[in-house]
Length: 390
Image (cartoon, rainbow, N blue to C red; front, side, top):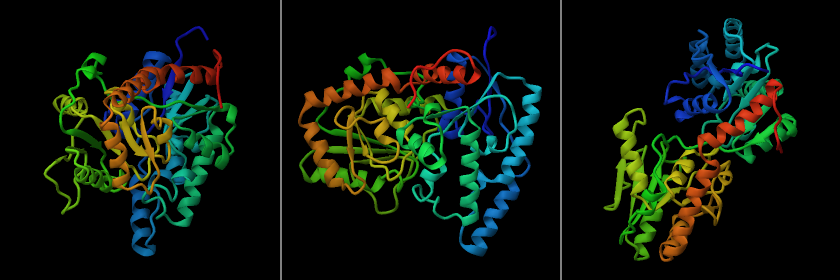
């Protein structure tokens, strides 16, 4: 293949929108443009069927007390197939890259090879994420069928964690030789220099940072209990919550709440960057997590991460290497004891901080992701060779 590879970026989302999939869609497209070839955006896309499936969901909840998964609908998938088939005729490409687009490609009929990328499978999500156990049986069947069709249709598959990859193989019969595991990157444009991190001042007060939009799912109550437990241990600490508001009654003199920061706003991006630089430890006792881009962001700022060993988290946080992982039933007291031990050992804290940033530099950044993805995409397109699979 002599010409620059033309990659059809197939998703219903707008690659230019920094809010789409928490900004990941934008960074995926930019990374592929730098490392894999010419990216041809095929989205955003509206089929005209979205309102219909939303109505089905509303009626299902009213009549049966169970929902209909609007995003994994065969009816919607057929609409996407017609729309994207037309766009592919107008925009010839060598290969299709479809991020979190199982519904978009499930019914697609094309000879163009597809690389499907997702951070989870439907089987892994059902009963795991809040809300995914509340769908009607017919909706669960549709969602699983959509996932199966997408996986079977893909020439190559990319996942950021072994948790997701194992589900693709075990639950949907994906060929392990075509499944590739490598993490995504941090959604940070202006990266801090190692010198900036090294100048981080350790004060008398331990600074904890929590970044998440869902208080309960992200483990907000455990993070708050950790702050309280540290106080009982005689360790002065403060906790900054970014992205959500704790429920009424959750208050503490050392608790700061910043309900929302918009990364599309340069001033607010800078504010978030300063919060990372002015913190000592990142804490996210998440209840359910596919991977967690925030762990990559914390690593970029050299913050050890204290989190739960659930879902895809163990693929980005090394227990005892770049942070600490805890079982799902760990309490704030458990987190506090481990954090206190680290705080009392500055040399070990520095070691974890350096290791965290080193892990970011190695493989938790978008350039590293793009170089890996380029190999997979070229393999799917029939050019080049890929060195390592499962």
